[in-house]
Length: 78
Image (cartoon, rainbow, N blue to C red):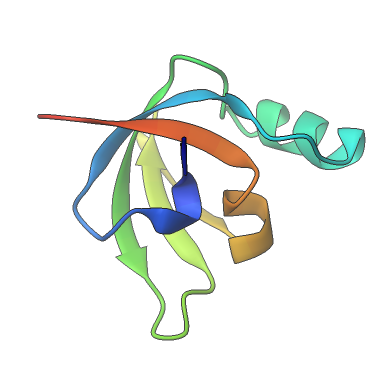
């Protein structure tokens, strides 16, 4: 299963769920709109891979690489 940090710029994906992680981070990600079934687009990845900028639900969001590693995704075609 792929995680969000493994995707390249311009990729579209659907959130499937979260890896086993601390509950606090999971709740933070859910509160930011990263819910299962949500479609996202990778807008930009910083040169060292941190942070990762994504587009979801009509807004831009930047995530740390450690947070992106917790989000399980499937790549989709758009």
